[in-house]
Image (cartoon, rainbow, N blue to C red; front, side, top):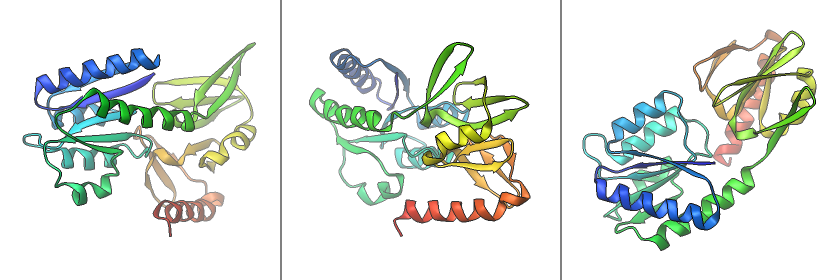
Length: 241
């Protein structure tokens, strides 16, 4: 499932883009879910309530809150860098303003099937590359969840709760063995009861951190120095320094 948002205050453009995306989904046999927003405020409010998209087509020349402001807000609220933003504009003069927002692409109006198809080809390739799964068992049945959808793991007596963007599931396993499976994906072992996905940490403090769903989790005293060092290394890796 590819979740896509379209945000443009011109309804005819939204309708045309939605039509193109549906056709591309049918052609590529890709299941697509599309939401349409006619203002930046509406999109930001929706995302602020912990709603998620894989891809956002965002008009720059929006009234009140323009597309640049919306993009900055999205990057503040949604720390997961895998969320892709494609800007749509009638002008070409926004390159420097968009640099920190890290858009996937910039499409000049009018939109065409070919332009959108090129973008979607890139998005689908990125999705295939990022499709790494965590497997777990409930009874005799095996389940899998995409790593990029996991916020954190929580130890609950003999069970482990897996908290994702869409809900919570529980399975029997040792948290240490779970960590061995996910540490390569930048999960942090912050406490004997918690493993967190670094991509969804929105605030680090000395003895605690805040997750994307506003859950505050403790960092145990024995882990604080280690977590700080890992955090700084990941920041350096992100900046390329």
